[in-house]
Length: 161
Image (cartoon, rainbow, N blue to C red):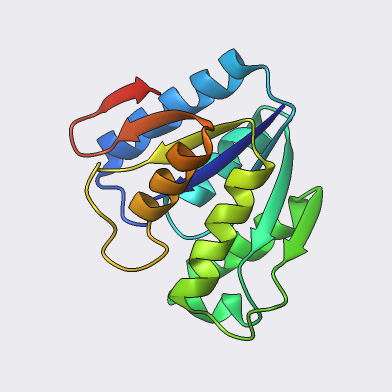
C-alpha cells in the first residue's frame, strides 16, 4: 500500500508541528502502508518523510523538475532535502519540466496521487494560492476518487474522505 502526501510549506509553530507529526505518524501506522511518496518540499513534505523513515517505511520521492534544488531558499532546508533524498528508496524526476514552475508542481502532485492508494494532506482547506498548491492536489485526488486524510494545521482538526 502506498500513501501519497502533499501539504503546506508553512505549517506554523512548534505546537502545530508536534501535533502534525503525532497524527501523521499515527495514521501511517494505522494504514499498514509499506511506502510513502512526496516531493520533499520544505515544511510538511519533509515532516511526512521524517515520519516514514523513523517508522522504517520506504520513501519514494517525486522530483517535480530539473533545478528543483533552487526552490530551497535556506541552506538548512536544502541540506534536509539532500539528506532525505539520499535515504529514499526510489527517486523519479519529471524530466519534461526543465525548471521549477507551478505546472511542474501540479504535475508532481498529480503523479503522487496517481501512484497512491491513500493521500495525506496538510491543508488549511482554502483554495490554492497558485497553480499546483495543496488545494489543487486535493481537488484532483477527490476527482479521481483516492481516499484522503486531511490534517488542518490552523485548527488542529483532521478528517477522512
